[in-house]
Length: 319
Image 1 (tube, helix red, strand yellow):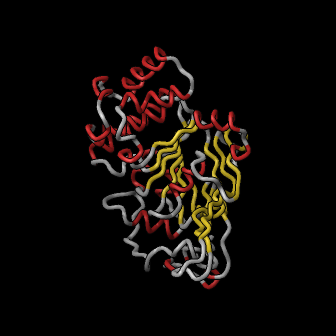
Image 2: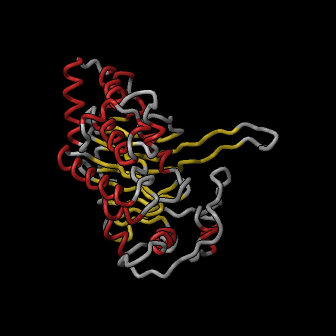
Image 3: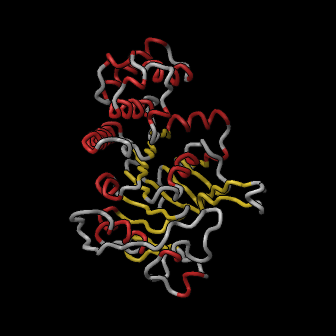
């Protein structure tokens, strides 16, 4: 795996469950199962998969909102899981998160100005400097300064998302993790937010980890894409290569569901049943109960990530 500004090595997050009347045996929900990624400086890296596959858990674990069960998270070569308090504070300035639900992430009791001011005050900045930075940031994301006195419920969906983006950028981060940043917006507003994020990346030299369930959006926005299924990466490739030549049956099924002309001419693939429970995942390949190309080996032996062509990796016994 190439060195990057942000690296994830064998990241696992398991939630222990106690024995209850309904759960007779104690167990654990395996939200992440050995995820490894390396994101280069200035790159837009996409993480895509169905709801519940572990995408958001990965985001929250990287920024420190969740503690990993196992694995390492490296920022510029430093393991952030072993940083002291001051070092973690500096890391959180450099790696910021844009939340999926801006209505829930923005304090409903605070005005836009208060929401933006508080993290800057916590960093010890002076009033004049804070005011200048907030006005500069408002202009950067295309918001009128008259909105500073409004509360979140008085903003449109697009305005709230711009405030969420500004809240993530105001501490001048190097890496921004965007967790489904446009999923709750109208299609016309989605395009505006994606264009804004592209523009900000160029102007501020940002690195993105872009999380979404929509392969079309990720293909448009990202340089490389990792496909996640039940807490594991099953395919990783450059965006155009993945879109043109998907290898894993799960990726093929996702692409086949995209309406219209997509460039890969896949017939519609209907998967069997629902995704298995992370409380009791299948043996072997996690995808085999739903796979339309499964073989006998798939139910007993877990496939390893293999580089099939240059920079195109897949975890599947077919290759």
